[in-house]
Length: 299
Image (cartoon, rainbow, N blue to C red; front, top):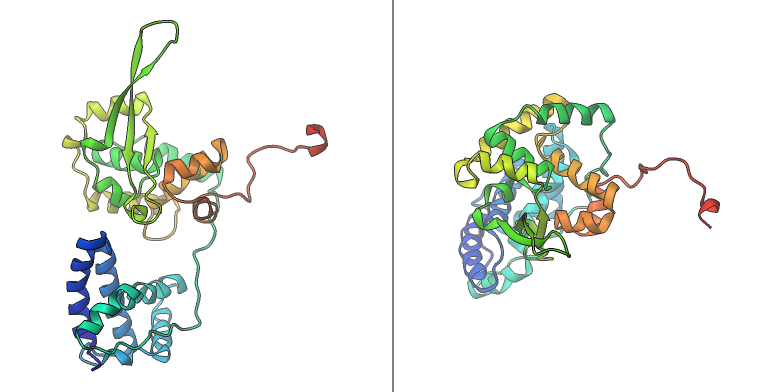
Protein backbone atom coordinates (compact mmCIF):
# COMPACT_ATOMS: atom_id res chain seq x y z
CA UNK A 1 0.00 0.00 0.00
CA UNK A 2 1.25 3.47 -0.86
CA UNK A 3 0.08 6.04 1.74
CA UNK A 4 -0.92 9.62 1.15
CA UNK A 5 1.43 12.46 1.99
CA UNK A 6 -0.83 13.45 4.88
CA UNK A 7 -0.69 9.93 6.32
CA UNK A 8 3.09 9.92 6.12
CA UNK A 9 3.29 13.28 7.90
CA UNK A 10 1.10 12.04 10.75
CA UNK A 11 3.12 8.83 11.03
CA UNK A 12 6.44 10.70 10.90
CA UNK A 13 5.40 12.93 13.80
CA UNK A 14 4.51 9.87 15.89
CA UNK A 15 7.51 7.68 15.06
CA UNK A 16 9.92 10.57 15.63
CA UNK A 17 8.80 10.64 19.26
CA UNK A 18 9.46 6.90 19.58
CA UNK A 19 12.86 7.17 17.93
CA UNK A 20 13.83 10.14 20.09
CA UNK A 21 13.08 8.14 23.24
CA UNK A 22 15.42 5.38 22.00
CA UNK A 23 18.28 7.35 20.46
CA UNK A 24 17.86 11.02 21.33
CA UNK A 25 17.15 12.02 17.76
CA UNK A 26 15.63 13.45 15.63
CA UNK A 27 15.25 16.72 17.49
CA UNK A 28 11.93 18.55 17.64
CA UNK A 29 13.26 21.30 15.38
CA UNK A 30 14.40 18.75 12.80
CA UNK A 31 10.94 17.17 12.74
CA UNK A 32 9.18 20.53 12.46
CA UNK A 33 11.51 21.63 9.65
CA UNK A 34 11.04 18.35 7.77
CA UNK A 35 7.25 18.63 7.86
CA UNK A 36 7.37 22.32 6.96
CA UNK A 37 9.71 21.63 4.06
CA UNK A 38 7.53 18.79 2.77
CA UNK A 39 4.40 20.94 2.84
CA UNK A 40 6.16 23.85 1.13
CA UNK A 41 7.48 21.59 -1.63
CA UNK A 42 4.04 20.08 -2.19
CA UNK A 43 2.46 23.51 -2.45
CA UNK A 44 5.12 24.73 -4.88
CA UNK A 45 4.73 21.61 -7.04
CA UNK A 46 0.93 21.70 -7.00
CA UNK A 47 0.62 18.44 -5.05
CA UNK A 48 -2.20 18.00 -2.55
CA UNK A 49 -1.54 16.35 0.80
CA UNK A 50 -4.25 13.81 -0.02
CA UNK A 51 -2.25 12.53 -2.97
CA UNK A 52 0.01 9.43 -2.68
CA UNK A 53 3.57 9.90 -1.51
CA UNK A 54 4.72 8.45 -4.83
CA UNK A 55 3.79 11.79 -6.44
CA UNK A 56 7.04 13.22 -5.09
CA UNK A 57 9.08 12.35 -8.14
CA UNK A 58 12.28 14.01 -9.29
CA UNK A 59 10.32 15.85 -11.97
CA UNK A 60 7.88 17.27 -9.41
CA UNK A 61 10.75 18.34 -7.17
CA UNK A 62 12.30 20.10 -10.13
CA UNK A 63 9.00 21.89 -10.63
CA UNK A 64 8.96 22.95 -6.97
CA UNK A 65 12.50 24.32 -7.19
CA UNK A 66 11.61 26.28 -10.32
CA UNK A 67 8.52 27.65 -8.57
CA UNK A 68 10.52 28.72 -5.51
CA UNK A 69 13.15 30.56 -7.52
CA UNK A 70 10.49 32.06 -9.78
CA UNK A 71 8.91 33.65 -6.71
CA UNK A 72 12.14 35.33 -5.72
CA UNK A 73 13.73 32.80 -3.35
CA UNK A 74 17.45 32.33 -3.67
CA UNK A 75 18.75 29.03 -5.00
CA UNK A 76 20.04 28.21 -1.53
CA UNK A 77 16.67 28.90 0.14
CA UNK A 78 14.81 26.88 -2.50
CA UNK A 79 17.17 23.94 -2.07
CA UNK A 80 16.86 24.11 1.72
CA UNK A 81 13.14 23.23 1.54
CA UNK A 82 13.88 20.12 -0.49
CA UNK A 83 16.71 19.14 1.84
CA UNK A 84 14.47 19.54 4.89
CA UNK A 85 11.81 17.18 3.53
CA UNK A 86 14.41 14.45 2.98
CA UNK A 87 14.25 13.69 6.71
CA UNK A 88 10.79 12.20 6.21
CA UNK A 89 12.42 9.58 3.95
CA UNK A 90 15.38 8.92 6.25
CA UNK A 91 16.64 5.36 6.61
CA UNK A 92 15.56 5.08 10.24
CA UNK A 93 11.93 5.77 9.19
CA UNK A 94 11.68 2.86 6.78
CA UNK A 95 11.17 0.04 9.34
CA UNK A 96 8.32 2.01 10.93
CA UNK A 97 6.70 2.55 7.53
CA UNK A 98 7.15 -1.15 6.74
CA UNK A 99 5.42 -2.06 10.02
CA UNK A 100 2.47 0.07 8.93
CA UNK A 101 2.25 -1.97 5.74
CA UNK A 102 3.42 0.86 3.54
CA UNK A 103 5.56 0.76 0.44
CA UNK A 104 7.48 4.05 0.44
CA UNK A 105 9.30 4.68 -2.85
CA UNK A 106 12.86 5.92 -2.77
CA UNK A 107 13.12 9.69 -2.99
CA UNK A 108 15.04 10.62 -6.14
CA UNK A 109 16.68 14.01 -5.70
CA UNK A 110 16.97 16.46 -8.61
CA UNK A 111 20.35 17.41 -10.02
CA UNK A 112 20.35 20.80 -8.34
CA UNK A 113 22.98 22.12 -5.97
CA UNK A 114 23.26 25.40 -4.16
CA UNK A 115 25.84 26.07 -1.49
CA UNK A 116 26.17 29.07 0.75
CA UNK A 117 28.98 31.34 -0.43
CA UNK A 118 32.27 31.25 1.41
CA UNK A 119 32.53 33.68 4.27
CA UNK A 120 34.08 37.02 3.42
CA UNK A 121 35.43 39.17 6.22
CA UNK A 122 33.56 42.48 6.55
CA UNK A 123 35.56 45.60 5.75
CA UNK A 124 37.11 47.70 8.51
CA UNK A 125 34.41 50.37 8.17
CA UNK A 126 31.61 47.82 8.68
CA UNK A 127 33.34 46.32 11.71
CA UNK A 128 33.74 49.81 13.16
CA UNK A 129 30.00 50.39 12.77
CA UNK A 130 29.31 47.06 14.52
CA UNK A 131 31.59 48.06 17.39
CA UNK A 132 29.91 51.46 17.78
CA UNK A 133 26.45 49.87 17.62
CA UNK A 134 27.35 47.24 20.21
CA UNK A 135 28.42 49.98 22.62
CA UNK A 136 24.88 51.36 22.66
CA UNK A 137 23.19 48.10 23.70
CA UNK A 138 21.68 47.49 27.13
CA UNK A 139 19.76 44.78 28.96
CA UNK A 140 18.58 41.77 27.02
CA UNK A 141 19.82 43.24 23.73
CA UNK A 142 23.31 43.58 25.18
CA UNK A 143 23.25 40.05 26.62
CA UNK A 144 21.97 38.40 23.43
CA UNK A 145 24.48 40.28 21.26
CA UNK A 146 27.32 39.53 23.69
CA UNK A 147 26.63 35.80 23.64
CA UNK A 148 26.95 35.85 19.85
CA UNK A 149 29.75 38.39 19.41
CA UNK A 150 31.97 37.31 22.31
CA UNK A 151 31.14 33.58 22.49
CA UNK A 152 29.95 32.73 18.96
CA UNK A 153 26.69 31.23 20.21
CA UNK A 154 23.74 30.50 17.97
CA UNK A 155 20.57 32.30 18.95
CA UNK A 156 18.80 29.03 19.81
CA UNK A 157 21.58 28.11 22.24
CA UNK A 158 21.33 31.55 23.86
CA UNK A 159 17.60 30.99 24.43
CA UNK A 160 18.40 27.67 26.17
CA UNK A 161 20.95 29.10 28.60
CA UNK A 162 20.50 28.49 32.34
CA UNK A 163 22.54 29.19 35.46
CA UNK A 164 24.26 25.84 35.03
CA UNK A 165 25.96 27.08 31.86
CA UNK A 166 27.92 29.70 33.82
CA UNK A 167 30.67 27.91 35.71
CA UNK A 168 32.83 29.31 38.49
CA UNK A 169 36.29 27.84 39.04
CA UNK A 170 39.14 28.61 41.36
CA UNK A 171 42.46 29.14 39.62
CA UNK A 172 45.92 29.59 41.10
CA UNK A 173 46.95 33.19 40.61
CA UNK A 174 50.50 32.85 41.85
CA UNK A 175 52.53 29.68 42.18
CA UNK A 176 54.52 31.22 45.06
CA UNK A 177 51.52 32.17 47.19
CA UNK A 178 48.37 30.63 48.57
CA UNK A 179 46.20 33.21 46.85
CA UNK A 180 43.73 32.12 44.26
CA UNK A 181 41.31 33.90 42.00
CA UNK A 182 37.84 33.02 40.78
CA UNK A 183 37.31 32.71 37.07
CA UNK A 184 34.06 32.28 35.22
CA UNK A 185 33.43 30.18 32.14
CA UNK A 186 30.64 29.59 29.67
CA UNK A 187 30.00 25.85 29.39
CA UNK A 188 27.48 24.32 26.98
CA UNK A 189 27.07 21.85 24.13
CA UNK A 190 25.78 23.41 20.89
CA UNK A 191 22.38 21.93 20.11
CA UNK A 192 23.16 21.64 16.41
CA UNK A 193 26.17 19.36 16.96
CA UNK A 194 25.32 17.58 20.21
CA UNK A 195 24.31 14.39 18.39
CA UNK A 196 27.16 14.48 15.89
CA UNK A 197 30.46 15.70 17.29
CA UNK A 198 29.08 16.25 20.81
CA UNK A 199 31.89 18.74 21.34
CA UNK A 200 31.36 20.81 24.49
CA UNK A 201 32.33 24.48 24.56
CA UNK A 202 34.16 25.65 27.69
CA UNK A 203 35.24 29.25 27.22
CA UNK A 204 36.53 31.87 29.71
CA UNK A 205 34.36 34.93 30.38
CA UNK A 206 36.19 38.26 30.45
CA UNK A 207 35.88 39.94 33.90
CA UNK A 208 34.33 43.09 32.37
CA UNK A 209 31.63 40.99 30.70
CA UNK A 210 30.98 39.03 33.87
CA UNK A 211 30.70 42.24 35.93
CA UNK A 212 28.11 43.70 33.57
CA UNK A 213 26.27 40.38 33.46
CA UNK A 214 26.04 40.39 37.26
CA UNK A 215 24.96 44.04 37.31
CA UNK A 216 21.93 42.98 35.26
CA UNK A 217 21.13 40.28 37.82
CA UNK A 218 22.32 37.28 35.85
CA UNK A 219 20.38 34.98 33.57
CA UNK A 220 17.28 34.93 35.78
CA UNK A 221 16.78 38.67 35.29
CA UNK A 222 17.46 38.72 31.55
CA UNK A 223 14.36 37.79 29.55
CA UNK A 224 15.82 36.98 26.14
CA UNK A 225 13.17 36.05 23.56
CA UNK A 226 12.92 35.55 19.81
CA UNK A 227 11.74 39.14 19.53
CA UNK A 228 15.05 40.31 20.97
CA UNK A 229 16.88 38.54 18.16
CA UNK A 230 14.42 39.88 15.61
CA UNK A 231 15.34 43.36 16.81
CA UNK A 232 19.06 42.61 16.52
CA UNK A 233 18.48 41.25 13.02
CA UNK A 234 16.82 44.50 11.93
CA UNK A 235 19.56 46.63 13.46
CA UNK A 236 22.37 44.68 11.82
CA UNK A 237 20.67 44.77 8.45
CA UNK A 238 20.54 48.54 8.87
CA UNK A 239 24.31 48.48 9.44
CA UNK A 240 24.73 46.78 6.07
CA UNK A 241 24.55 42.99 6.50
CA UNK A 242 22.38 41.11 4.03
CA UNK A 243 19.90 38.37 4.73
CA UNK A 244 17.19 38.03 7.36
CA UNK A 245 19.58 36.57 9.96
CA UNK A 246 21.58 39.72 10.57
CA UNK A 247 22.44 38.78 14.15
CA UNK A 248 24.13 35.60 12.93
CA UNK A 249 26.89 37.81 11.50
CA UNK A 250 28.01 38.43 15.10
CA UNK A 251 28.80 34.72 15.49
CA UNK A 252 30.76 34.79 12.24
CA UNK A 253 32.73 37.88 13.28
CA UNK A 254 33.62 36.22 16.58
CA UNK A 255 34.82 32.95 15.05
CA UNK A 256 36.73 34.71 12.28
CA UNK A 257 38.62 36.90 14.74
CA UNK A 258 39.53 33.97 16.98
CA UNK A 259 40.62 32.12 13.83
CA UNK A 260 42.81 35.07 12.79
CA UNK A 261 44.37 35.66 16.20
CA UNK A 262 44.68 32.18 17.70
CA UNK A 263 44.29 29.71 14.83
CA UNK A 264 41.80 27.09 13.69
CA UNK A 265 42.05 24.86 16.77
CA UNK A 266 40.92 27.64 19.09
CA UNK A 267 38.13 28.57 16.68
CA UNK A 268 36.97 24.95 16.84
CA UNK A 269 37.00 25.03 20.64
CA UNK A 270 34.88 28.17 20.72
CA UNK A 271 32.37 27.34 17.99
CA UNK A 272 31.81 23.61 18.52
CA UNK A 273 32.17 23.06 14.75
CA UNK A 274 34.86 21.22 12.82
CA UNK A 275 37.68 22.96 10.96
CA UNK A 276 36.16 22.31 7.53
CA UNK A 277 32.93 24.05 8.49
CA UNK A 278 34.76 26.96 10.07
CA UNK A 279 37.09 27.58 7.15
CA UNK A 280 34.17 27.74 4.71
CA UNK A 281 31.34 29.44 6.56
CA UNK A 282 32.83 31.28 9.54
CA UNK A 283 36.34 32.42 8.70
CA UNK A 284 38.12 33.92 5.73
CA UNK A 285 41.46 32.15 5.16
CA UNK A 286 41.78 34.00 1.83
CA UNK A 287 42.51 37.25 3.69
CA UNK A 288 45.76 36.90 5.70
CA UNK A 289 46.05 39.15 8.73
CA UNK A 290 49.81 39.69 8.57
CA UNK A 291 51.93 41.98 6.46
CA UNK A 292 54.35 41.23 3.65
CA UNK A 293 56.86 38.54 4.49
CA UNK A 294 59.54 36.37 2.90
CA UNK A 295 59.78 32.70 3.68
CA UNK A 296 63.52 33.00 3.01
CA UNK A 297 63.81 35.20 6.09
CA UNK A 298 62.31 32.39 8.18
CA UNK A 299 64.90 29.81 7.12
